Length: 280
Image 1 (cartoon, rainbow, N blue to C red):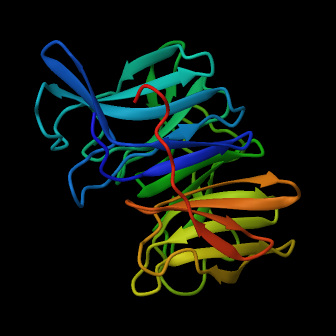
Image 2: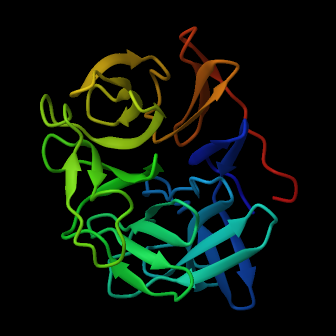
């Protein structure tokens, strides 16, 4: 096991979970989670909306092989009691980069291989079917208030979009529609997002040269970019999570090497050391 950088983290019941690159070997094969190569695109640690399961993907390759994107992608779902299940992802989709995922209860898992369609994994039947009508470049997925959302760069100018209506099922041909207000302004490169509530949204935007975390507010008709948060001036933020603590929304932001907490009531970013769980 080795640690190079913090990739993503999630918040559930005031506990922060952090995903680090690691390799779990079994015989002549290994399953490498969160691509460790410098400059490579990384995967995402996700938690179901009900907080019961953690999900991530790994790459199955010959033991000792550096992940080059050619291995079989495997999705892992671990429960709150520590039990886990794994599914091999279908070979008829492009899995060259670690996909992002989201789920409501863990029974049906949305997975977005970049530059491809969003697919759905039925964990009962192990069937994997397309959910969206066409290919999109989704860099993050989230289930919030019974609906599926994605961070996308297209349609231009990009932003946060709703995927279909409610929680679309297999072969739903769901359309991807930017939330009202995200359809105007400069081209955006959203990498992660998190809802604080139904009217407040935080977006990590990696567009150059203004990569930053932005707070968006909903006025009842459209979303508006309300503020840029000075979470990091030296690092690009690739992961966001957040939760309410003592009446304040605490935002957690991570680059590939640093993690910050941000109290949105006091506007104070704090560099945070994140410890590995016992046994890793």
